[in-house]
Length: 86
Image (cartoon, rainbow, N blue to C red; front, side, top):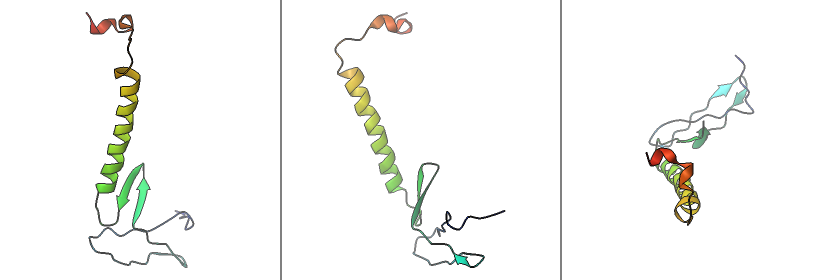
């Protein structure tokens, strides 16, 4: 397996800040406090507040869009939704 050291980083999951040097061949990978993987934010102390806040913000944006396009809209063609009235 080949590891691209230019694209790789290291992170230690621990409640206290810990330095851990991960060496690949002659290069030491930079240690980070947070990184995103599959759109999820991981923090080195294992805390999730920032990720929860991000998700709440995304949900709020969707709710605002729905409110503007559905709730505020004065006329909705009910013939487009016959399954709701049968």
